[in-house]
Length: 94
Image (cartoon, rainbow, N blue to C red; front, side, top):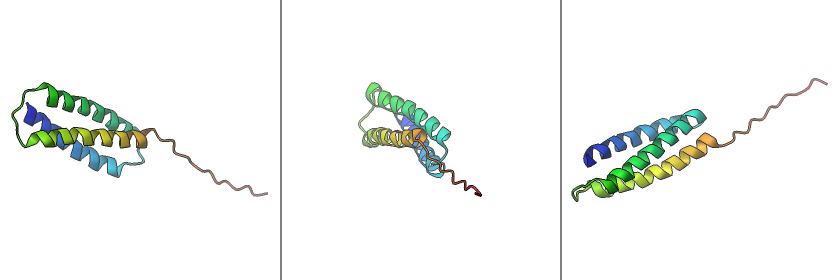
């Protein structure tokens, strides 16, 4: 279970980063991915600390992936909930 969840989270991370990068101005998508990422973070820490696993090379990568997901979620929350200022430059004909 430990290895399977790690690879699911790793694939999600790659897809998430790529999609996020190309959709920085799509606030709805950023919010959605940020909240999905919060769920992935909870699952990742629950599996890392709650499931018995052998000492392997994946241990360090798994915990690193969890912490990197926290940073990524914070960035996504920023892009998702930031206030975008629009300037309307209408000129009057007077």
